[in-house]
Image 1 (spheres, rainbow, N blue to C red):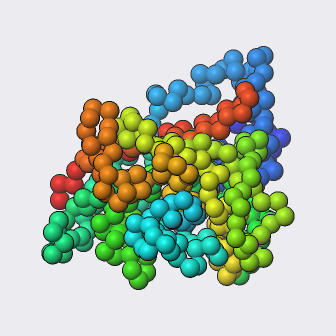
Image 2: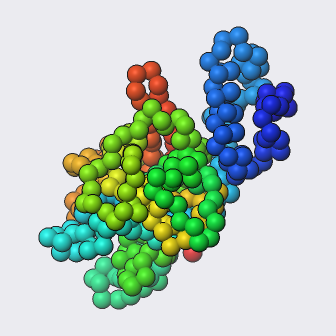
Length: 361
Ligand code: CA
């Protein structure tokens, strides 16, 4: 489209042939929003020249190989669903005090590893690491036997702040380019042994899957939703007009729906995550990813990972063919889907899927 002069009036040359969207995002919201609206207008106009040359400008999804949409910078994974934190806390901590004392005061997170974020469809090799024998008496170097998925969403940062300058909760939305589906594959046995005292490490950094396209915040405007009622946080985590999004999220294991939840069930919203991430002056950059943490919701069907669904590996999940699962086996496929729908407006986030591959080390 650029070659046909569609965007001549927008100073945006050189970004359209890039492998990644970083340069496009770097144009800034005013230009990227203008380009989005221009394409939308052309697609809605039945006399559009663009539409008449459809095959030249567009490709059928099934006929192309999807690639990562971004050259990903830093990656941070939050822990922002109260439903998830309570479910996990009840399994591993005192059920009466499921949440750690700091949880309701700040969006907890750890710094992850961007190098192992892969695009949807990439095989996930079962990781090796340190874990105990079944009778828990011997520590071994062996493949994880408690492999899990985590249904999350990724906030894609679209504007940088300079080092030393925090982003306020009210301004945070200006720093978000859009959202994508994210699966934070997790090896629970490795995680359980290593996570104290410094948090997740090899139980997480072997792979995370990102969906191949990003839904811009402009497209999500009609789907703004109220935030969850909170214990009053410190003032830097408050904004005049707090909001979340109504995005229905589902997870499937080997074709069976195992989770149905919603982005709006997050306790800490992305604006608060950004405000807390930068409260100390930490700088975010274009192409950084802030993952939400497992998005669990209310009820039995709202649990966003197998750890919660099987209550810590005690209650098997029954699949279509009668097979049972506590955690993922080799050959299993996990598919995440996300969508917004209201009236005749519908937005899809694409597929986020991966198949577990045996480790032949
Ligand atoms: Ca996670």
